[in-house]
Length: 84
Image (cartoon, rainbow, N blue to C red; front, side, top):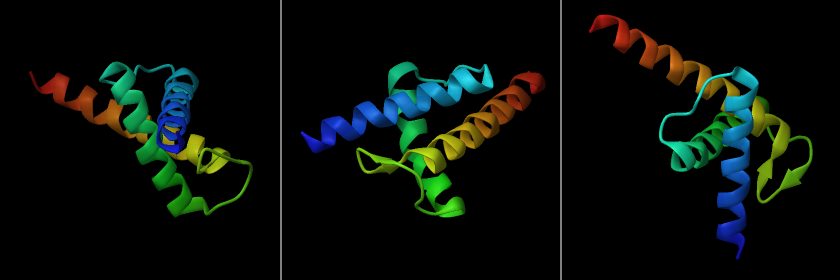
């Protein structure tokens, strides 16, 4: 049950990052989950473990890291579309 809870929280974090930035995360639900997990790792790496902890994620660093990840991915995708 803990793994499913982590998937749900990761998906919500990835979705929130997309809403805050105003950009869609590529890949739909799976993309949101991946953005949530990778963003949580990135945010925890940069900011550490602080704030409320839900589903194994420190929420504030996870959301900030996911926002950074969505911005970076959308920038890279935008640059690759400009080349075509």
